[in-house]
Length: 366
Image 1 (cartoon, rainbow, N blue to C red):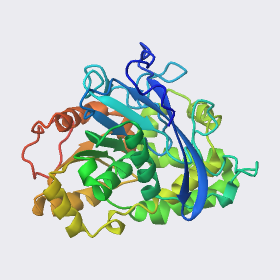
Image 2: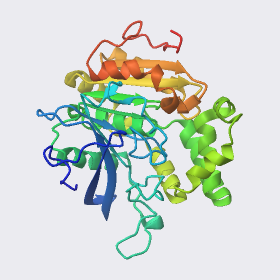
Image 3: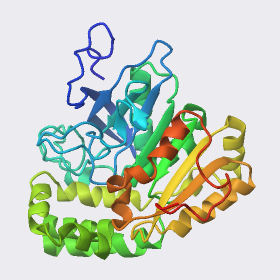
Image 4: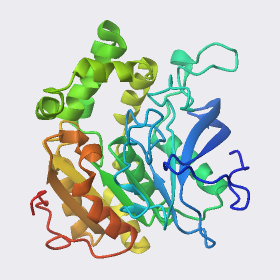
């Protein structure tokens, strides 16, 4: 990582609009047996305290970037701006918040997004293309671990994220629970289920050659918002205009690469559930999972079943189910519904739920 911005005495002031400070992780790493020079851009908000124990890693969703807080370059709010900032659930006056781009970030054509993937140049000067290794969530976890070390942080205060970011958060809990004592995973499942593996994945592979980037983004939007969400958001707006803003920044190669990667998500491949549960109890891991009924990517029942098993094993796991007209995208558009639970998790406070093991969920009107 570029070190010039990490020492408090020399760091430039954070911009008043909350855009954050830029960081870049640079490594030559082995991905599935192939040496790859990797560059990933990120942003930080807030200050690392003297004890270096207030760092929160925020992991972005499938088509998201490191711009988790503050405002985007066009002035619109960042994707979790209502959740992250001074006085908000993830309070940047108390926590040092970090968000790093994934490998193969979808918005690779945005000049402000630093990432490495199939569309990046190979050392021979030509794009990696199909030569780019089939990396997985374990590889991404390892890169985020390098980031943690570069920041001089012994362990994260918490790791949180929505959708694909929730996958990453769960992998921190599964792979290194001693380094992630608090984990919040929103709108995700413990493993890729039939929707991802048998519907979305094959449909994406079928649509991409014929419909190209636009076809892929239409499919992602349909699964993300659902019919009700699209009706609610675009009856009085133009979906094609929304789509055009995404077309100019997105890479089809990276959409396909991430689509392949998320289908391999499975905590059982990290360790058997019984082993994970014993480690979580031993480490005192606090898990918060939030799902939306009607989510067309991650059916709520997938996490509900997992939460019942963790509760029976004595894991400190709170599972919440919510209703949102936005379907899966409630994880970005309805943060007010789960902000109190995220705030309570970060401050080790009791969560405002009927009981710790009540897995029926909480409606937005409860």
